[in-house]
Image (cartoon, rainbow over all chains, first blue to last red; front, top):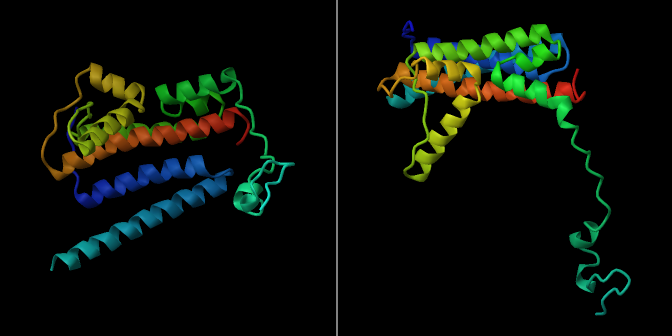
Length: 61
Length: 158
């Protein structure tokens, strides 16, 4: 099994991508709504990722 | 203070929530027969996206397969740990039994990884920790796919 070494950001981005795809597919009833909801979830994941990143950076002093 | 002999409800409860709850409840929908949803849910557990494939939702089946399988494979490639049941304090039991259950819920990918010796011991490090979370989350995402397959099979969703 090949080994991969990802940064925190890359790992979190991949996690967001896969999770958003599944949430988009299983949640809504039309393909358009699924796409929009998947992108919406991914965008929120990224926003929260940056928000928490800055919070930890500033909180660390 | 006299009890209401018609209903048998004590007077202090006549105008309370207790009296209101005595209204007839909505009848519960009967569970659809097992042969309607069983094969789709079982296949959805065994092969991620398999339930959707059986129900002829090929596009969604492909997306679910790709997302769950890639999540699982990245978890393995990041040397994440496939958790095994472990006793100890409450948090340890919850984490290891819960993690094991989530791993098993991935279905065939978990079995292949275990049988072919890809299950790795716990390694210290942030990337490996992410890997463990990827492996657990792959199982949880597969549960969402199973629930969706169930709802499609019983006609609740298209």
